[in-house]
Image 1 (cartoon, rainbow, N blue to C red):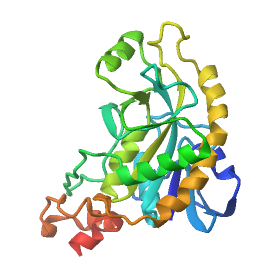
Image 2 (cartoon, helix red, strand yellow):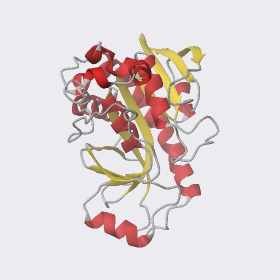
Image 3 (cartoon, rainbow, N blue to C red):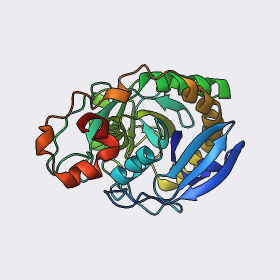
Length: 284
């Protein structure tokens, strides 16, 4: 099964046959919304509205652990994430699609690991995006007619406020490409869950660094989001069969193989039970 994270409009794309809505319970609480299970050109897909239908949750309030654990329970092996971002470079214009391969973490208030409570794991995260999945999705975006940029760095800020001008200029001095509030946390948890993950970043604004553009506003973001929605849907429909059939010869499916440091006999029984979908194949 392929997972899609984004706005609730994504599962209204042409070609989707909605089969059911599934509400899941996880050891980490409730996901943002019920998962919409559907069929896209013969591929089973699970959609999740990141902020909840009606956009009810701020980036800090999203239960990322529950969201990603729910995908794991559903048997999802690859996640395609769509989200709005600000551009930090002149050449990335509103309505462009960016497929970053790196992140910088500027979050402060969110849980971003499944581990703790008696279990320690350190996954490799040097390359946080599944490059093969990103390449396949970028190829689909070009086929859909989008202006595509592959590679670069996504700076993940806490929010919900947008950047100050001083912050925006600082981040540009670091050479980052886009700025957003959600995707790094998802990527960290996807790696711990051994799920391939890629970001389709939909450019909506120039943050507040650009002298000839107005500072970012919600009205501006919503306007470009509506313009991006059709392209995002078209891209996903083309990408889903590509990523569903690719051979997972990346490192994502074995990310925990050498990451668990806790002595197997010292793992608390409750943690062993709760984390079973993640660590069961390694701890018995």
